[in-house]
Length: 367
Image (tube, rainbow, N blue to C red; front, side, top):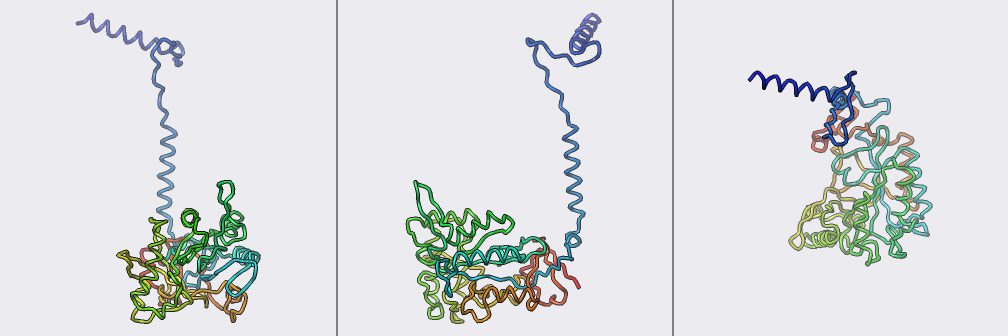
């Protein structure tokens, strides 16, 4: 037994001595030797973990209300413009902007502190606008070809640079912080060019735009009964779902701004057609005035106001009339606090706060 112990100790000493030189420096093993596993340096990993834990704790320690920059005068119960456009074409008219004028509109919005949000987010009270800026919503009725016009060359689809989408994409590239988006309300022939419907609808969804319902025949809903209303709305939803089955079509623009009779009003929000149900979270009227904040009890999501995107025959209720009123402080506009999880509202409007829309967000009321 003693000899075995001595032999073991001698073997161990031999192995250890072969791994070090006289200066205890690591010796590179011979090519024929089995390569030793490299030692693991956990110092950087521990440092990174400690930093991450510290940052997480700091984030927990930050009071989201105290982080609001009140010098920017946030007011999240102010008004938001939902702008109603129709066509983009060569000739200016009541329901059409020229490409030059549409570009002028967008440039004005950007330079004067407006940033786009989607109608769908507005209806859910999701405001991600940068602090100090005002949300604005763009909508297009009728699904005209000049909203989204493409040509095909050598198997490649080319967007007309002077159609609505072409101009919006131009500004998306020009001003990445503009948060460019829009909602397009469609009838039975979306954007014309029947052969490209599938491509266009999927392209819109993939590129951050929203699609809404504008009824099948564009008839005045005031003249329809409950069954007819459900057919008008449900048939469009069913058509769109053939192309974009995973997309929730949940907004409706009323044709001609025609509201249903009281006994049929429920069908603009909920209904079914051919055993397929639909549900709208936002229903739009024609252009008139800015909409209330989504957090305002005055907001009726079944009948939302819009502003006409025109400068012709709008009787002081066109887009630039309201831009001017906001500039002159004749109307209070929505100014974002920059935190979608906080709703910042002046105390004088406390009685108008809709807590159902505020939901789990933190309410910041200030004097």
